[in-house]
Length: 209
Image 1 (tube, rainbow, N blue to C red):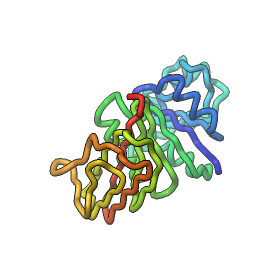
Image 2: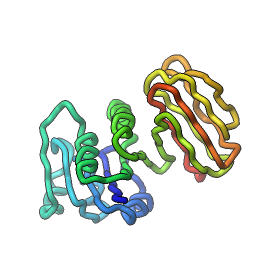
Image 3: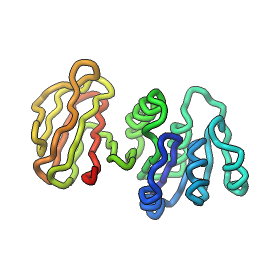
């Protein structure tokens, strides 16, 4: 199993969180301005990729021996470029830090990329508040009782069935602007979520928050 860590240009993760996932990564990629955070942490990536509109000159100087891929393609975001690079490296698990916070349009675009690329490999977005996990058609996960969880529909999601939550859904639909499912609570350590159609993201809150 080959794991990649991608550091994006949203709100920087804590150094504790960064070090935790760096330790288990086989390949570390910075998406453009994510290299600024890596430079602050003093950890060189294997690759810096993007259109280089956010990475600072000082960061490039610090990482002068790191492979750079400057891509001007405006049909994909810097994070999408990094995800594509990780998939080409045959990474079967990808953790993305720094994908949330910052500009709201960027954060929404990043969540869209999470849904899009989750069809190709296993991806999670993680920050210091919790984890964003694509549900696909079925998600089974073991979690501590009392943990908070929200279900975020990126498109119309139909025939959703959940088990293990305080307020379960039974063949119900979710859609932004119509109905969402936020701030639920896990009441069984074995959580099961099924979705017939649509892109659904589970946000599992950090139990410490």
